[in-house]
Image 1 (cartoon, rainbow, N blue to C red):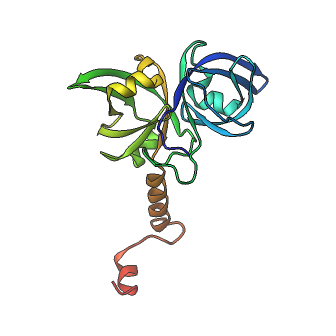
Image 2 (cartoon, helix red, strand yellow):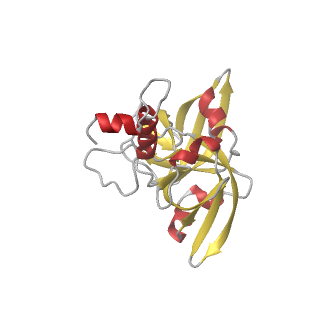
Length: 216
């Protein structure tokens, strides 16, 4: 589990594809102390397993074909920046929101504009994520925990404060870039439970007859 609070950014040093998988090599801008082989690190919001910490300070991750295809980790340019966050420890402050590190979709960045002292980012809204989006709810963009502001029919917006722009890779994103999205886990479970209670084929649809029989 993660919180969506970025610890540091890292430069993409290399991406070697071998068959249906690959190796991703990153150079963190800040040294991460106490790293161990096999630990989970969210890279642009995607949970990856650390394979090795090399003598030159780079970190190496094994990446599955699905990871490269379903996230922006397979398309970002060498030399570009990604966000890093180590896994949450029991007892840590939950400053963002509960993030699993499982990317739901990758969507296009539609642009930015000034909103007071903040910057508004607008991102395309994939059809499969619409049910999980709520104003003032949570969304994870490239691993960064943010609050939903405006939700349209085919796009949504979030506001970024100056420190987020300066200390995460989101400040590098340009119109047309692809951004990794993870919807709020709580929203997913709510939608799943509601679907179970309203499944006509399974005979679990809630109606007035069933409510009356239940004593409502």
